[in-house]
Image 1 (spheres, rainbow, N blue to C red):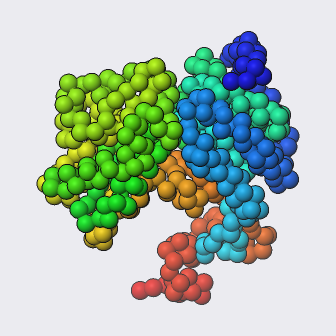
Image 2 (cartoon, helix red, strand yellow):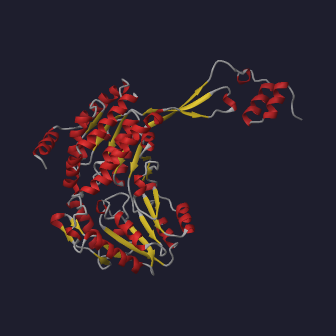
Image 3 (cartoon, one colour):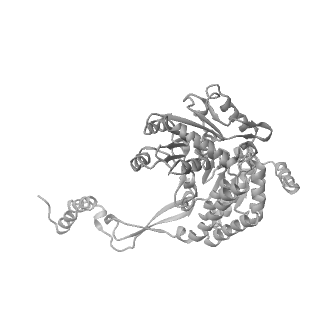
Length: 496
């Protein structure tokens, strides 16, 4: 870490950020928002262009920070964090005018003559609390949506990734409009101070325990929230697949995703008892091809984020119910916070590893008699953030999509749905709610205001008292959509 970075972090820590500071910040930002500063197309575009310039000019600094926090490989940092932010910025710049345009809406006979539209308006002052596992992507991606929608934004990065948090504080201050966009660093006290305030929306990425705290705090002010949580994301592997391609994609979606420290990383595999040996052999071979005979020395795998998470994963691995189930890996290096890719076969359902999100390089394999039995295994658990299926059976594919509930789903691959801006990214049930990415980010931080336009013409006396029998017949026919009844009422006829 450079001397400049360390000095900045010291200065930041020296400034106490308490409830009073948070209240002043929100009040200041609300005044800026009410002035209309953030609403203009020009301001939004200027901030997005500045953000894009920041990412381009500071790419090396971002890579260094991610390496310091997670030992994240440079190419992985570029692909999964930097390039995705560039793409999100470019998409927002390209589509912003269209996103901001009012959307025409149909009207009904009841409101004739009239026209209608849906106007996207910014919510106001929003809070984004991001996670440590993709500390740059998960911080900046929702900020892009909040800016595009015209809001004032406060970002609270995770203190568990301190180098990236410090970098964000410095570069946001340098490149963006600090009168409406700011970073607050800190840990639990600072986050608590922020959560005491009234926001117009909160987006939180992290675990369910903290998600409940965020939601409880928001409820006091009736503040809407987006919760991006996680869960145990399963991958079902049929026996009719291209095994080489399937194993490569599973490994990419597990150890290629921050060494399994990703909310949509593969959490466990379900396959048949007869196919499991072939799948395990293929996984072993491909893991050695990707990471060598000693994966602890591989430069292609991130380390565990800190000693607390290392201890948590070690506890899962040392559970007496699973310690004898390891078929590959299990090696660990406490001094470097590294754990080798580990496969475990037929771990018990009541083991620790099967009752919490793993968020690391351990991969249990659950076997069933028939591949369709995997559906009941998944349904017996809380709804995951992602669910994956590898098969060439179109009927199985169709049944999987229709019967399994998950935040997102991918057939014959893993995690790539995250890179598709036309798809919403979000959870369901305990894996979260609300979504963002692409236009969904813009929508997440916008209020869809319904507007109906009428002139002074076409004013029907039937809508006003006194309600004579003729008026009543006309109104009932109108509200029932009974065109013949409307004609009869207008000419004074009554139906027998």
